[in-house]
Image (cartoon, rainbow, N blue to C red; front, side):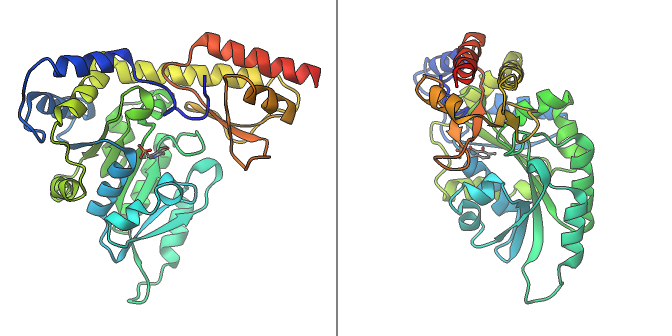
Length: 346
Ligand SMILES: Cc1ncc(COP(=O)(O)O)c(C=O)c1O
């Protein structure tokens, strides 16, 4: 099984069942005027213990870019971690959708920004017509380094951002994995900590392809519906996105999936760290490992069904390994058997 990404894994059977059930009705209202979409909106209100505005889209990039465009004017900037997906891996979609807002990357250990770094940056920013002014802070939870912001860090970052008049966005492509690690409520990790708008990921955790833009400040949501249409992301057969999300949120499927993926990451980490020379780049707090392994181990894994992603180039020995809802214990055991076998014969 591939450990290269959680998007390499398939679709949870309950999601496929939900798609089949949605297809049983010969017709339903289009563009989100259907009963399943209403149910999903109610599910998000209940989950986040507040009135939310919810917009389903098929990809995380669309969710991030549309949300950031609603929060940031073309002449503003978005502050984010230097390894943020929005900065490194979205081919300029946030700049495109905001009509040219500037992404400003900031440094931080283990994929996390600190309130001190943010404060220093904002304090030093000249308030002049010649400089782009900061409008939005974007945090990724879980981070691109597989770590998780503790609640007090999110609160401190949002407090600082608000003091300088910024909006706050959370890229929650792996929201469920982070939430499971912290053991807190969705409300605590978002609006109660000061987050204005969340991109709630589901595709990496078992759906076929659906993400939710969840906005806690209704005023900020006003333009998203039309932005989504204008950008070509309003699904006419919306009920099939909604069916996925409805099943994902029902019976805590999303939390079970994330708990399993996180547990498998811990098991993989514990086993790989028994190999001489194996070192972790970042703490493992969600479902991703960034680990340096001996070349002999990597060569053996690459020759096996358990592919990994060399993170620092084709000859680098730092790899990313990602577990998911359908990574079995047998798969982990087999991967460890191959890795440990290669290490002992090297
Ligand atoms: C942190 C993060 N945000 C957003 C995305 C974007 O998701 P998509 O590939 O569905 O556009 C990804 C995908 O890898 C991601 O890792």
